Image 1: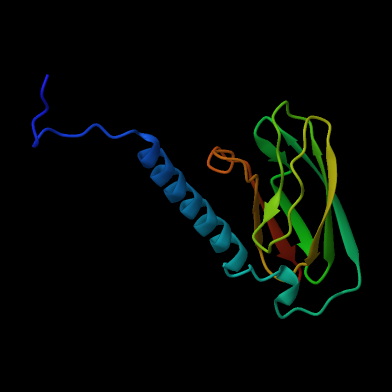
Image 2: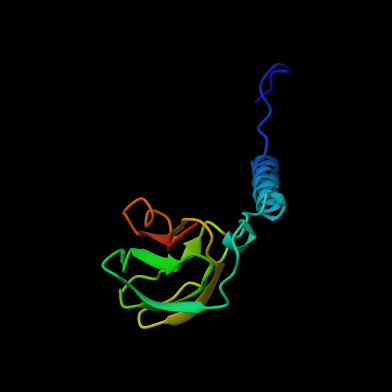
Length: 146
């Protein structure tokens, strides 16, 4: 058999796999860099409020893809500590818009979250994919005179 000079030459797929792997690594490095260098949220304590010196402690339970209670009223200027227990068979955590967060908790797991001095409404949610969208959210609402 004779080969034609203009016939395509078969190439091994190894080069394509290496190229794809390099693109994947570049994307992952970019995502990690964005998380590290992104603007950090402003903690609730940084808002203009006079601390009362009091601490309010609230027990919150994660169960049925919800936080119970899903609204926490806190006297304006109090430090809030959340005692979170996961009673659900799924893993959950609690992330606050202020930047405070718990670790992921398995069933019957427990974590203590210092939410800081509350000077404004703070949103919270479970960070696992789809949980926030499914309604696993809570609100921290300051009460009393401003």
